[in-house]
Length: 163
Image 1 (cartoon, helix red, strand yellow):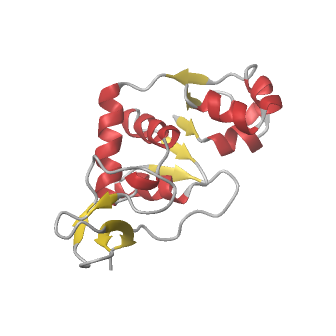
Image 2: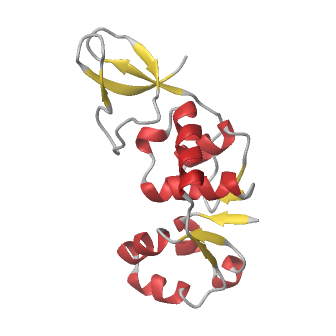
């Protein structure tokens, strides 16, 4: 089974998409990026899936363990959930998604770019007292900036790679 990231939907030829599994949430993402490609994809033989809440919760736990959760979008989490629940191979160029899947023992393939060469683990570090904690499953998610507040001193906590 193949779970396809939005990059595959955008750049692969239609025949290569056939039989792929995608999250329903990708339809909106695809429409924002390319309305024309979105119309074409509508005719492709793709298995569009809703993501069960239990699958999504498992994906959040997996992403929190690797430390990637704060930087994954809702669509990314849906794809991670499908990949884990279906024991499928995820086709993506997204390094954060690749890292989360690899940390969970899953399989990834690249869409067009070279893949991540290392598997990393992340934690949160306080910019004030320098305390570190594992990434919790209820962390704020955003593309940049702090994602939590330190319980010790109240300063912002940022994602940092574990040594």
